Amino acid sequence: MNVKRVVTMVLVAFVLISVVWLVVREVSPKRTAVDATPAATGRQVTVYYFHRTARCPTCLKIEALAKQEVEASFATELKRGDLKFLSLNVEEAGNEHFVKDYELVTQAVVLVDYRDGIQQRWRNLEAIWDLVHTEEDFNRYVRDEVQAFVGST
Image (cartoon, rainbow, N blue to C red; front, top):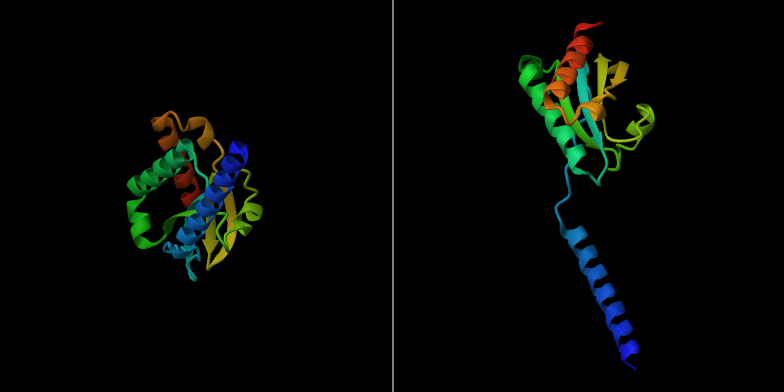
């Protein structure tokens, strides 16, 4: 009889935890969508950091380093609106297409060149994974790649 009681208690606990989880999920504030729409006129380069819901410490570090470097090295371009940094979860509704669009297999930093709101070209900065543990090299790589991308036509 003890085994039956233990199994019953475990099942009841499981059901209660599941109900609490569902309630918390429903009442928690919903994230507002990030405007990933490029500028309608002129040229704009967007530096995307694409991630999934589950994120490891290395993924968080890549995002933080990339964002810091872009903000530090391209403050003027960001202020003018010629350059934009966006962090997007590809598992959120409406963002799933980015996986196919940019052939994503994992978290990534992708540069996209828009002209009058139309994508012209893109580049995945794949070396971020090799350089993430050497901040100076990581920062130089991101800075040089963004500079080359922004400077080319």
